[in-house]
Image 1 (cartoon, rainbow, N blue to C red):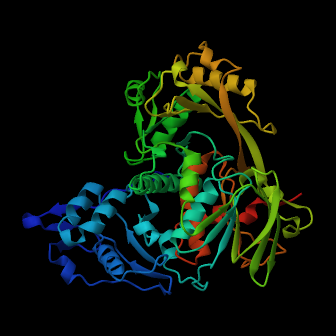
Image 2 (image 1 turned 90 degrees about the vertical axis):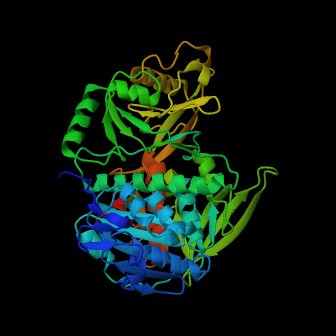
Image 3 (image 1 turned 120 degrees about the horizontal axis):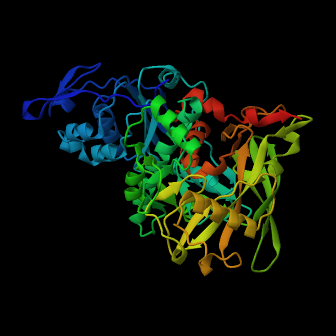
Length: 556
């Protein structure tokens, strides 16, 4: 099937600032429309902690903007959430939306944020988050199908958010989920064997991108949804952080997916022939165009992702957990997880690096989430598994190399191929990573550094001076991390429901993000927090079904 771009809505601009929007409503809008509008919200769920409205057609978004304005005027308690759900078969372009909503300056405080976050015209669900998580807009673009009908089914579960959550793991998955829950008013305690962003999320640089499939499948739809949400999430969160004086952790340089050999070039040709993506998501470039975009000479073309870039994962994780409702317990080894009287009792041993002594302590919570990456199998209690059952999770070693700026011609944007190379920052550019199956060595090796340098020189001839003393084997620095992957290389984000546990036990798993944690974590954290708080889901059932925990349980 050809996917996923949609045609934009047609707008006819009339005299005196009026406009005619073609489509289901076929309405003429003017500056008086807001006062005459009849809000057709269908109230789905009303609860002390969240309210849900739905509108059959989004059109210009006036219903949503008026609802948002009224909601904020009521000064909702921190953690209370307004969910607004709507559909639009053909969304407006961002330029048309910006011009249209400018007719109502009394809504400018809200409409400007909507325009800034407006997603590309891509079929499927789009979750937009505003007001530090107090307003969530779920838009369905395209024909009304199963995804839209899923949103309009009453939720059989009682609308209740947890009073407390314990998260095991403070990598990108755990940090994103903790922040998401905290902004919904849920107190969170994080237990981590090291500290936030120190294990698999501890690299100095990581690329934000997704390798989209040649055929537009559910797997590709999930990756695309995650990429678009992550781009909005990081930009918005960084804008907020910059206002508080924090240094940037996201660098939206753009990203080139290089057609680095004949096979990849053929794959990209097939991809372009079978799919249509908005240029705001990606577009093909020649070798010369690519060279101009990345600032170094490349000998092949590729796909340019204008909103891509790189992040500082460790800094990001540390920033995400800075919230009054988040408490971090570093250097903790979990020794037990038991549920009693609907409460989880987690015991742990915490090491004090200064004194070398250990401290035993216990925490309690309504719900428990395992976000421990490659350490998940060793944390998962055997009692939760049936005889002979195991988790189909595996660690894959990845070593990156830190290239001194003096030894490279640094690109101005991220380049991905058989390896990736990020622009240099603070005198270092990161390249990698190796993909080492059945290798448990946690330390950087000369062989892995040499592999990274050889592949990078093949990918981008002449960009790295492999004879420079700064990249000598005995001097070159790097880092090893272990990606957590599943048997089908798809993430896990859902309730733990084994034969020995009830489905409503309040235990969850969020792992298996592989090498795409920076891309997948924000959206899957949003979806998992939706489920944990009994709020409308950010993913349609067909995509959420791919994330369930049961699929990684296997009889030996």
